[in-house]
Image 1 (cartoon, rainbow, N blue to C red):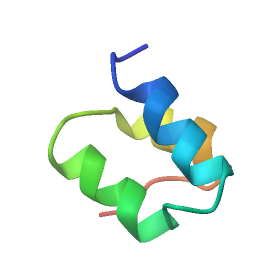
Image 2 (image 1 turned 90 degrees about the vertical axis):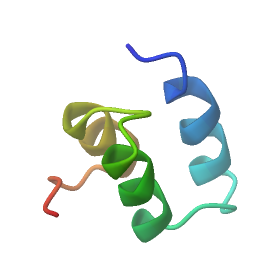
Image 3 (image 1 turned 180 degrees about the horizontal axis):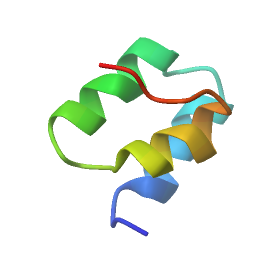
Length: 46
């Protein structure tokens, strides 16, 4: 699990981040595509 996973998940769960916001973190390599799916419950597609 990446160092940023918990923070991104918390902000997503609280409604501060959208799925598009979380995709930015994948693009920046802060989280993985698998972690994106765990956070959003949607498969990652660029």
